[in-house]
Image 1 (cartoon, rainbow, N blue to C red):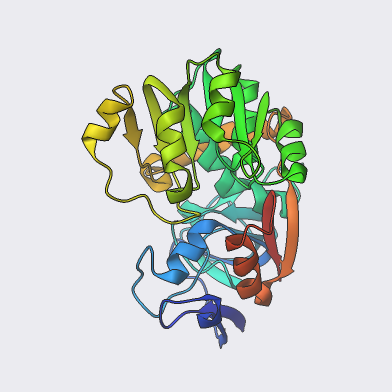
Image 2 (spheres, rainbow, N blue to C red):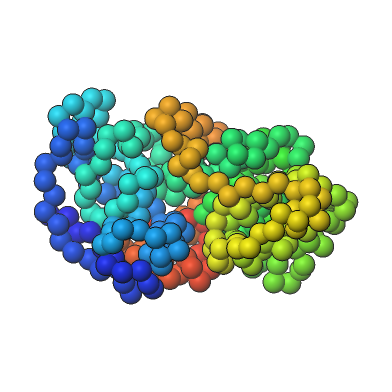
Length: 324
């Protein structure tokens, strides 16, 4: 029997309910995994709230770390007892056990323990594709990272610093400012006390940044536009404060012929080869110490509703994980 989160309608955290499910044996190409840690991500909130609509009823969560309990017919390369992880796109990570297609699973390096893996897989893959395949940041470029102490933000900071970029981060508190500096930020702007655009222009001698990584959305959109250098790129990859809407092309022209993209992880991890190469790069950067997953808070698995509330309220720093 598995304990599984379900939502029957979109709404607040209270719509998450827990049910018992009798999982069948794994079918062809499937693996049954017992969860040992579950990653919490903003996309889980977008799914639950209806910002990203789902067919209902639905499970929640995409990032599972666990141990293989059984494999189905045709599965090769994995056996009972192997440590594995997945970051989707299949939903249903808020569960004690899951049936998963073998092609979505990665074998975990022995050096990466379960909690760190839950803080690393999806967020690390996000950092990898944003920096290296979406924005294609190069050494010497100035880059702005909003929410630089967050789960993805601090990985972006470390990754960018490792490849030689000059990193400017925005944060909401002194404690988060210190986290961003430890991750490698060259300049940190506490946006509640200091204007973001003024801080960026001071750090860049008035030039602006080549790339903006904006996972906050609505609340930072205006600052992102004004912080980008002419012909700069804004990568809007999240909606923590609400979605950016009504973007006018003339606005991009007015701010210096800017480029904007709204990328999706699974468009960059669309094939098995892309997934294998991307995750190999993530593990390489982690082994080198360039990115260091930080677990800010942990919750019991069935406290997922409270964990989502805390994440949405900005009460977390680094990664938040759920433990069965």
